[in-house]
Length: 104
Image: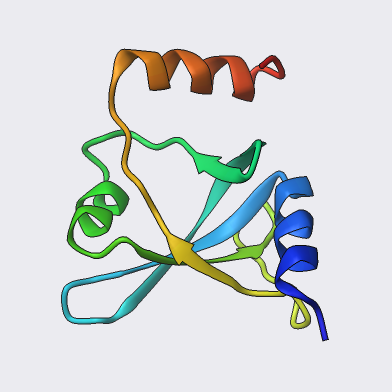
């Protein structure tokens, strides 16, 4: 069995994950996203007008699993649940740009 710490570490090493978020009806919606590790947080960037952001503002619950760029998930891939925080300010955007370009 994979521990939560092992699963989180594996996710932090992944370039892409399948991000599952939930509609108001409770129906799960999964999509592949590029991910980066920032200290003890996993971060994703997406346009603020996207359906992902709209759904996260209604329900911050998320599940993530390592995936391919196209969203293919291996059968034994660990699933980690958590809560998303939508951050939309200049400082956060600058930090994300640095992280996704490989800097800190």
